[in-house]
Structure formats: structure tokens, C-alpha cells
Length: 98
Image 1 (cartoon, one colour):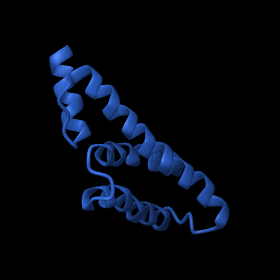
Image 2 (spheres, rainbow, N blue to C red):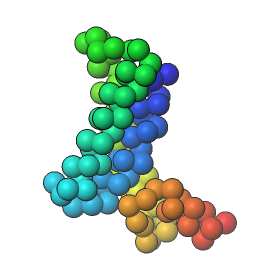
Image 3 (cartoon, helix red, strand yellow):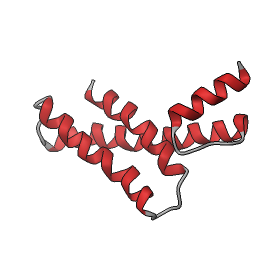
Image 4 (cartoon, rainbow, N blue to C red):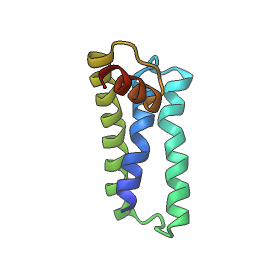
């Protein structure tokens, strides 16, 4: 369950990361802000920091980041103009294509 939350939380951050210059400050934030949120989730759910939990959560982290990158590629092909905000872009694209 926590892995799914980590995955879904990282999709918008991966979207943002894919739309900014590599190694820029925004790129750095798009990768590292979710790490802080994941630490908060671990503490809130009492999951702890056992080594075996890292495999699932790190995998969910990277898959979420990659999924966000795929979403922005898909939107660029279907809606042309995209921003760094996935929610706004999905709304605009839905309005264009009905």
C-alpha cells in the first residue's frame, strides 16, 4: 500500500522533472522533495527503515518518476503545449479533446 502511494506521489514530480533542464535547481527539487515526503510517510505509517522496505519503495519511486516522464511525452504529442504542472495540462488537454 505504501509503495502505491509512493508511486502515485512521484508521477507529478516525474512530470515536472521531465519538463525542466537537467541538473537545474527545479530538476533537483523534483527529485529530492518526494524523498522528504517518503521519509514522512515512513514515519507516519511506522514502516521504519529496515533494509528490505527500501527495495519496494525505491522501485516505486523510480517507476513513478518514469511514469511522469511518459505522461509528459504523451501530452506533448496530443496537446502540443505543456507546462510543468501535470494537473493543469491534463485538464487543458481534456478540454481540447473533449
